[in-house]
Image 1: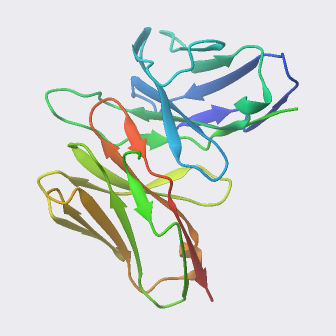
Image 2: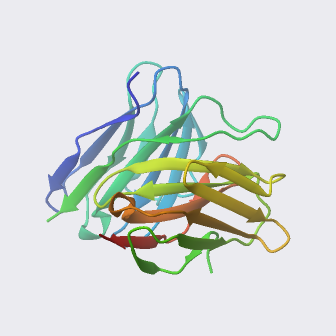
Image 3: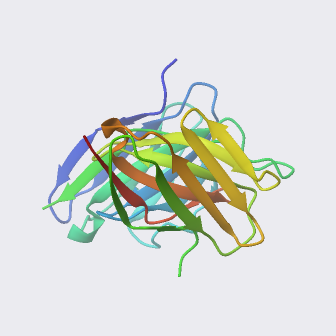
Length: 118
Length: 109
């Protein structure tokens, strides 16, 4: 069974370019979460998506960042007009169930995409 | 200060010794989870303890949770050099996990 897959593992962009990060959740998982990790820091929540729906985007910067999880295909985190401050590791996680009636579930993390903005 | 703060920030021990890391949080939680991250790699889930549990074991790992003090500890017994990594606690209050800044553990051979 494949775990969460992310690609690319490393991405280098120049300032002003666009970055597209892909995440394929564990097979059968319909809930995807994106986190960002700056050097020497913990992970910070960005967005939570279910198939075709954004459930919670309270951690996403208001501009330049967007996320989607289409019915078919991987989840995409898109960063437009990247700046040096966007350099970080971006992790995707998936779970089989979201919050439901007080239950909570383990999130399975991918290996991350390390974005470097020159 | 933020939810899920670990201490110490860094810990260096000799192989065979025990390592204890602590985590404090501020709001009510559904559960608390501990993760390990090797340098430059993704996160590996270690253990989950629910808010109605006080202690949990998994191999050489022992986790305690004190909801009255809003704190948790992770004990790694008989440490090995391969345990060298960053350890993060994460609190779960719904759709997101809130991570602390982590403890960097170094186990010297």
